[in-house]
Image (cartoon, rainbow, N blue to C red):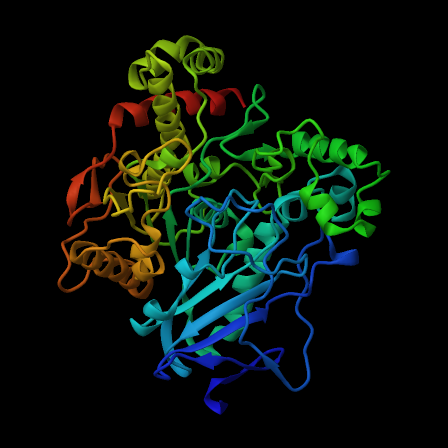
Length: 519
């Protein structure tokens, strides 16, 4: 259809339209050159122009990755995979000079799995509501985050790793240059994501490389404000440059290569999917030693906590929060003996305080306590700290929420050894509400779920448009304050209530502040 053709800086593309013709969809648009061959483990390069009209009707490949378990809530069937994965997708109801707010979604998946093509992230409903919705793929795992002394030297910046984050920045640059042709306003770009997608938003809000590319930020259940110290090379899913280089060098030696450059001639799947022979075949393949974002001194000149504390962040309006039962779908540190031993070893003199807040007297309680502690330290505390720092040091406002609605899972929707009843408002439960995509999961949704979805997505859309979630017909959502103890609670209804357990937040604040002082 001629009306689904758009001229980008690189050439014409042709997408498709919704059944009623109201929404235009453009899939698999390249935003950078394929990061293959000599471009493996290098910063993304501008996409080369093409001749003629390029079809944009199929999603581009996702990054090569381990298979997600079919029983997980993020599994929606197989997708095409390739090292050539730097593609984005656009849903829009306006073209030309529509100047609609732009919402750019970063998927989660521990920086190891995930895709911007999941049905959960379909942008049609948000496009109908007035946004231009963008999803994207980026490099994951070792292809996206391998750090190595050779790569640091050849970069000319003394830094390596973080290629997946550089991909996201390249996509934002492409959006700035091209989104007006799709009806989007390049001066109203909201970056939002969930889990490690939200982590990405927090890191790019801290990065000088993203300055001017982001105008609002939404973080759903994820951030990085715990910092490695001299006694802990890895903390909160981040790694120091020198320890990351050591891990990368060891990995290269393990594969029998003399240099990182030599690995550029190896098959991408061999690098991405390698695992030790001793690994449990049934265990998920998460190469966390070589797949962490890195404090590299370039994309991240300091830790995000230090950058925000010193008011050096990209100062844009922030909307962030987490879910009531974040740890329910996570692996546990149980049984009781292992939980107590690991906790006593990690927390030292803080162990009695930890056990008081996360008590366990038997194996079943240890599993629950372990997951609850993981949920608080990895998600609840992180997003609360993000909101608190922005409220304290930023000129732009922060808005904080807690998602407490328990989705109506069918009885057989167990995950790990949990039952559906125990999962509660689990990690990622809010996503279909945000996108107005409840229909993607064949669960017994109610009118209450549909009303809540309309409210949540309206808050997100208002925020994308104005930097403030408030609007007609919605309960008032006040900005978060540095001493704030209130949050917007998305439960059976939407309304203001108290933040999560303040004693637990204070514990993790104390624990991680020690690392910052000793680092």
